[in-house]
Length: 252
Ligand code: NAP
Image (cartoon, rainbow, N blue to C red; front, side, top):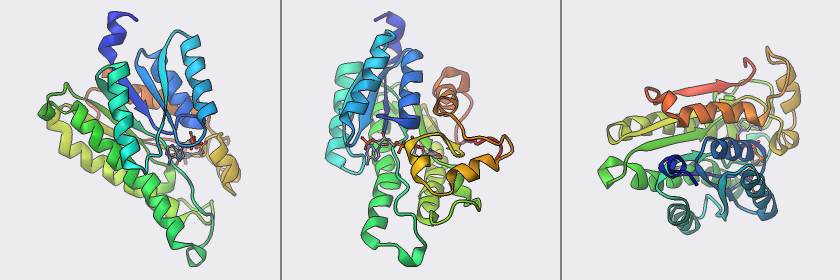
């Protein structure tokens, strides 16, 4: 490990066992951060992301924690800093679509779980990140990037995802509000709103590929195209950027 790498510290990427999170973890490791590859269930997937990062000379550990489980999340933040150094950034990427159905066919318990994973979990993670990075808590500042979605704008085209759209609207508003709260403490907070991206989630979401092919660029996005935007937001190149939502959607 070089001195520069140590200075870059740790980054936690939630939901990084596959898809967009895996690409973000790989990119931030290439940028020199020590990366927590978080997962809820797919330990093998997370370990293979870690192996790929280490194979390229990067630093990474796989840490299991459901983002909706506060004790597991607390333990993840503690372990990240113990093993990889001071926290430099958090990427709240973990998310789920939930049940794809009209609102009059939705189940209350499943809706509550969707809110826990997509909204409350990222807020709890952000709380830990602020405690670790804020100059008001003795930290040196840092960056939080929340993965939202163009679904926050409830663009017509994908049916039965109104609750998911609402969770992503909450993520955008949370990012903007938190950016105001912690700007004086050295923390920048932004969101990235992807359009349809080629992952398991998109494959399982009915209507997603038609949505993508009707976009101005006429194709589905790649996970690395989202990772590049996150990498820039985390980096010093984005030092004057906070409270922004960057759309990476092929023009949707
Ligand atoms: P994905 O392929 O379904 O991957 C989801 C990842 O999140 C997996 O690593 C999964 O790991 C993890 N995860 C799920 N629930 C979790 C929980 N409770 N705690 C911790 N980790 C959890 O999804 P994706 O397409 O890469 O999506 C990533 C993010 O981008 C999500 O926030 C999604 O809403 C957003 N997004 C995706 C698209 C798209 O078209 N793909 C578009 C816009 C926005 P385990 O299997 O281990 O649980």
